[in-house]
Image (tube, one colour):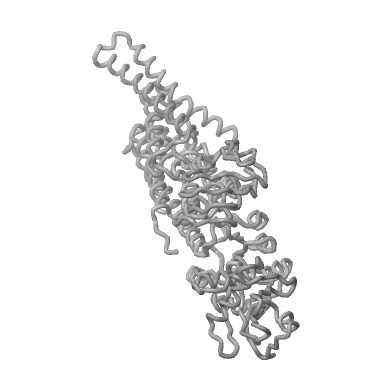
Length: 639
């Protein structure tokens, strides 16, 4: 029989109510067959005794004994194994095994058969009542596309996805899963990325856009160039993180280990005293049966697994027990800037005109040369201008000047877009005080050596950054900080926009780590949030590190305690709130289970509950803990 911890994992780790894994199906079949065989032994024995008159008393006794062997021996074996290995997770089997052996020696074979049978039926109901049977990892593995359509010299070949190599091109047809990470070469489609990012809306992708393993192509045919092999994909990385998270045990489990070390001798002592005083072995057996610590064994594991399941659905991967142990004590939150608080993407933030030229005219002139350039500044300008649906000339002959900008001509007029120094070298005069107070970089636009204006570029703040900082304050963050390697002036503007308390700029990775140490010390719990290689030291140094985007830097994710599968900053207050809720549930479970156990032991000691009734009633503690823990799954997060 599976021990109580595995029962908890099976019952709360699932994401589907309708599907069983192969292992789960085999176990369910085995439990049903053993239970049916035991019931058959019981039924035939009772029929033989009460209907046929019991001509040979040894027959029903033999049937009951066979039933005991089928259901009882596995429990006794597990209990003995727990005694020799000092495995306290088998505390239930230890106590029930002793009770069953006492029943056999007391010649109460029906009771020796019924106690393990009822226990196993109750546990089967527990396993299926809260969540179902398919666990997270097996469910995700089924989403992996194992084959790919490889494009070779214009022909399509179906191959094993594990054989794909970087640089090869594959065809993704509508309705097909994407087997590896890559970049779209040709075609346009919508991709269902819920499995990775948790975003409900399909992502629109076209040439140059990244696509990821574990997602599904919805409606268009695309050709994708392989960027990561099968074992290195973002999806494989997520599975590895989930497999690590399976072994998480909440720190409160250490409390239960100490508790059970005293609990088992206490119960055995109570049972012995009851047997001596009452001279009724049945009452002592009842004490042993009702004292099975099912509820106590689930105190921390059930809510922890429920929290992991809820977090995974939200796109949050929790890698160790700091989730509860330290995240609930956080009072200082440290953010990286680029790629964390901001999108890490260059964007046109402001258009400054010179003289009497209109803003749209300035933008149209800039776009007429920027459209032919692949420089990030030019691409950001064109993206902004096309989004505003401003028409511009696409007929210029354009050339790119290394280190300067882009220049275009139609034979009559010359347009330049680029750095101040280059524009001035070409004969255009730019007033010294023009755009002197702008933040970020600026590229100037000229027409026939006449200044038209300048376009300002900078990183854009994530839409939910300020809301996330405010939510963290509500959850107890007294101090919020941005640490960045960027220049001080733009960093401070970002900090003011987001609403953090302090900003430290021009920091190298080791400087970030030292600053984080100074912010934490012995008195403060520090949560660090970052996304890049330069954040790895800070993420490892912090009490709790959160890596933004599980499809980002491998080093940052490896250094962090928690990884986000998307860049939704509201997942940070979500996971802090989830940790606080999980801790509350653990303490509630502890009170519930101990109260129910003490009550049941008292009732059985005074003869109110028989051993047979105790085999049913002892499950009240486990059911109470499971139902209380399942509140984590049912509750709606405010973040």
